[in-house]
Length: 126
Image 1 (spheres, rainbow, N blue to C red):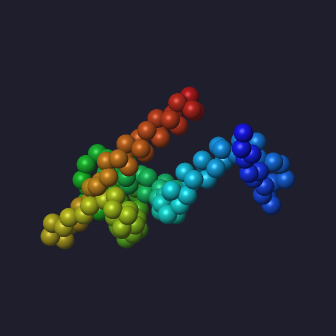
Image 2 (tube, rainbow, N blue to C red):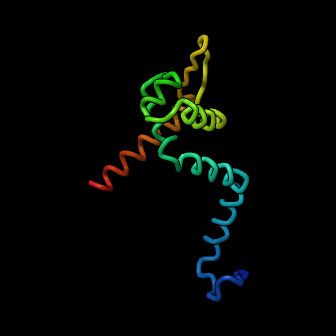
């Protein structure tokens, strides 16, 4: 029976008990290494109540900037700034109709995830 290499680490003095599992997990994490910073940015942008409200508002359909600002109780300038951040991530599309600017959700998967997370919280808090 071949002897396995014992994994040691300067951060932990305990010998690794399940070396195969640790090696497999490290390999899985390495596959996602380039995506993890982008995922962190996603959560950073979603970690804002105003942007969450915008996304959930737009789940009801296309809205102009003025309507979104009324829903949020913010100025048009503040609303436009938040919309721009969401649009820069590719989550919203924008169209102009004269001086009016309309936004809609471009990522249905993101909306499904947000709504699912809300249901999860409701169940957890019930």
